[in-house]
Amino acid sequence: MLAELFVYAASYRATPPAFRPHLGEAVGLWARGQRQTRAWAPHLANSRGLIDTTIDDLTARRTVVVLGSGPLFDVPVESLCRTFKRVILVDRIHLSTVGQRIDRYPNVERQWRDLSTASNPDALDFLEAIDDLDWVISLSLVSQLARAAPGAGRQVVDGHLDRLAALPCPATLVTDLDYRVFNRHGVMLDTADLLHGRPVPRSGLRWKWEVAPFGEEGHHTRRVHSMAAWPDWRHA
Ligand SMILES: C[S@@+](CC[C@H](N)C(=O)[O-])C[C@H]1O[C@@H](n2cnc3c(N)ncnc32)[C@H](O)[C@@H]1O
Image (cartoon, helix red, strand yellow):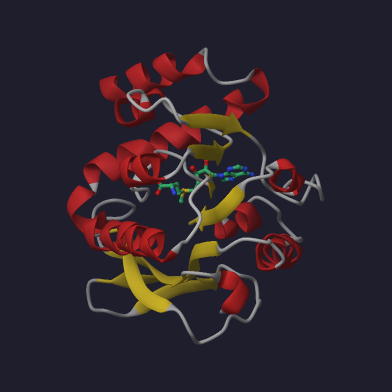
């Protein structure tokens, strides 16, 4: 709790006022990631591994943009900073904790942006203004955008995924597809489609993310997300 208060306070001033209401949620995500290092390890290794191997396949390495970079749990930011001329991390919250990972690299910058097309259909237009854009990575973001847009979830999912598909450079997508809540007998108690009915190709990598093991959200329940990832969503 003390650590959370410290991170909140240390992140407050650098956060533009319009985004400060989201600080509490971001600190909560960071704290959960700290508690669940073991449960989250396979998921994080899959995400980071995909990014690391995709770097090798790219011929041009000028600017890379990471959408939904957040606390950088699933971002091998050091590899990005070493191989790209410019690394742009975009999220509505960048906690002070990311400084420990990026402060030594002069070629990385943070941008505070609302990436949801729910309130602003042009939310991803800033990508067009980056002349030397060679790679965009969208990381566990699209389901979060949909969650915050009740009644417009599918529209927001389509807005994000269709925009990624139209980019002039490779667009790596990592996303949750659904979640399932199980009890200790393995009985499924709850489930939801996090892409709101948007069909996705069967291609791509699949794995499970134990977001909330027993004890995190309930003593006798665990929540597991089905994840999918495509190195280049344009050719999925
Ligand atoms: C599941 S977290 C993943 C974070 C990061 N990829 C990681 O694992 O360290 C989703 C991220 O999306 C960000 N996010 C949610 N809604 C957003 C929005 N409307 N605009 C920008 N970022 C948003 C959150 O701040 C959070 O960092």
